[in-house]
Image 1 (spheres, rainbow, N blue to C red):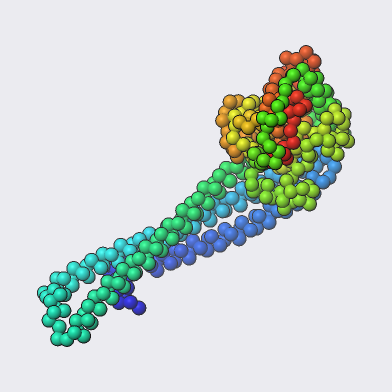
Image 2 (image 1 turned 180 degrees about the vertical axis):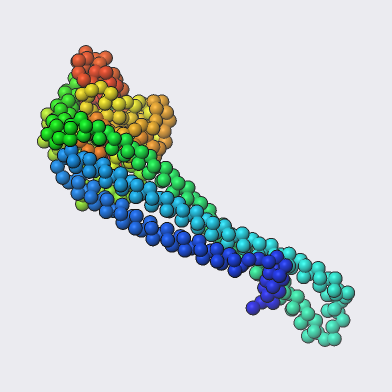
Length: 444
């Protein structure tokens, strides 16, 4: 052990009373709590995964009233477990920050004590030695004595300086760790906020489904009759759109659109959600949770009476109700709306359209809630609303459409003669020429 470290540690401990043992006990208690939290998180995450398996199984079954209610119930339970996971992670982050902060404070006190000890020892040496160090060297009986005195002084100062430098390095490292955990905590708090919003949305959707149970008198035949009514209303709505598309006379210049494959748009869901989609590829048959592609898909072909032989004009992604829906790029909210305000108008439900500065506009439909307003500037990844199953939707999903901005307008359908008497006449929604519909996968 170096002389400097020994002198300084003993002196600092005696004078300043640094509580090394007390901190060790505190750190041990904190670590025990962190370990307990990690165990709880693992258990909750296993519970979340089990709920997901149940949801995937329900999704593969025939759409019935009971399966719809069961899906909502399990989604609620899954979200509650996810919220508990996040709360446990936040608690662990707080404990780690507390642990690191205590360690940093302890190191800072030790450094301060060492520095003060050096100063006091040097002052005492100066007071006790009537003869200066230089004079001692000159008056030494031999050259070896002079070298010994000099070497002791050098070693003493070097040892103390090395100890202080080591402690400073440790403090810097601990400060970095604390900053990292603080940043992680901020992300977890944000995630907790998202999950709280999701739970609120699922609660609202559950209430809507309870109203549906009342409306159908909990009879499967009544539910299937309602589904048939939705399909018939959607067929009429699509015909209205065809008529309107012919009246718009909007010209789309392909040269003003981004290059296909340029990746100018981001997925309307979080990176974590999209990562989880890759792990569920066997459920959807793809890596992106897509339930229906753009164009003449098998579903649109089999339901030509609904899509008027024009195919599907967007992509659908199967997601739990209450999932935050994100803007695919910077832009301005061109409009928002809710087609469900008109009885019998089964189309987009709650929707948001954002226009971007690159010639593209994006549509997000079947939402359960909307968090933005017309004219609002939004950034890539900003929450526009929460997913749902409003409008023409028999299950929870997001309808994500991409349009050539030149060829789309937001219109009140009743302002056009052909739509004046339809159930959707009083609603406002995006309407586009056929050439304005673009495949989202071309730009993601």
